[in-house]
Amino acid sequence: MSAPPIADGAVLVGGEGRILAVGPNGSVPTPADAVAETIPGAVLVPGLVNTHTHLELTGLGGAVATDDFVEWITRLRSLKAERSAEEFFAAACQGVRDCWAAGVTTVADTGDSGAVMRALHALGGVGICYQEVFGPDPGQCEASIAWLGCRLDALQSLAGPRLRLGVSPHAPYSVSAELYRAVAGLAAERRMPVAVHLAESVEETRLVADGNGAFADLWGRRGIAPPPPARSPVAHLDRCGVLGPGTLAIHLVQVDRDDIAALASRGAAVAHCPLSNRNHHHGEAPVAAMLEAGLRVGVGTDSVVSVGRLDLLAEARAARILAALDAESALALCTVGAAAAIGLGGEVGCLAPGHWGDVAAIRLRDRAPADLFEAVLASGPGDVLATWVGGREVYRATARPLSFQGDSYPAGE
Image 1 (cartoon, rainbow, N blue to C red):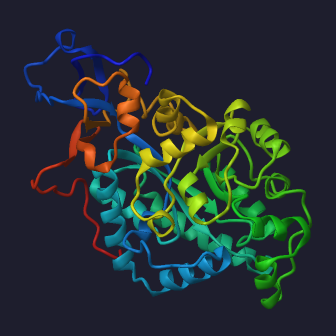
Image 2 (image 1 turned 180 degrees about the horizontal axis):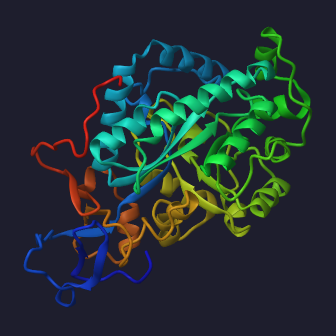
């Protein structure tokens, strides 16, 4: 993604997991202790970067069937309440393996169970886990922030050079202004990134702008007053001090040019989930305007509950249509551009010396495609032949079993 495609190319990954050399096969050295492998009929690409997942929900695809988003949220909360810690952990582990099988090596995941952080640590996975926190009632703020601090303390020991911890005050319809401010302060104090679902639905905008709509009705039944009126959800979070260079804004469908300008001025980034937005009938995010404004944008799949099978390249193809992008620019949304969006630019999303050796081998349906970018973009999970994380093979399209890497954590711990 940083240079033209290389015919008969090779990648050399060092023992510490970073790329040492990239180029034509004849020019890349083969040290005596190297494990060399040739993969004919394939193209090597950077391991894909998914800027928004909920891997703890793996296995719940199709479990919530309704076109009413507020009802969908309510049903999903009930399903999550029925899932045990052991089930969350097993689901998260399967979700990580599913990502590897689809060529995805880095995930930016949001969830409240902590299971994905544990799964990535147990399996030797890579990414950022944003610990969710909820609390629409201002009276809950103190308890919610105390709970969040305890959860972060419990998970911090799992963090490392390739696994980071962040925070996620969930959404304007589930978090009070007071809690937003408290979480922003905690994130600054602990130097943690922030992810927030933002400007996703019309009902969210109605809640924030004039205190009406289905979410406002839910708040009212609990005796919770709507937040002070704001021009938009983006303006609301800006007023709460949430937006900044370390903020990943997820969805951003219900936004205008003033919102985009505000996000750009704060240096925030975007996780664009076109298929989820479509499935929930939220509309189409103005991706072209975001890119024109200089926002860092990556695509994400959202959860299996929203989209079924997680197919990141399908998300990139959908974003391409919305923004009228060429194939290379669309592919950047799940590689080098996505890496920049989650603060990992220079680390992942590119096959270049110094980057981590995260690589996917994708089968070429046409052995001599006219445009490799088009060929990769047209592929899907079934075309992934093998995936490596830091030079370590984590997936192979054969019956050979994969073993756990790193420390194993008992389910539910």
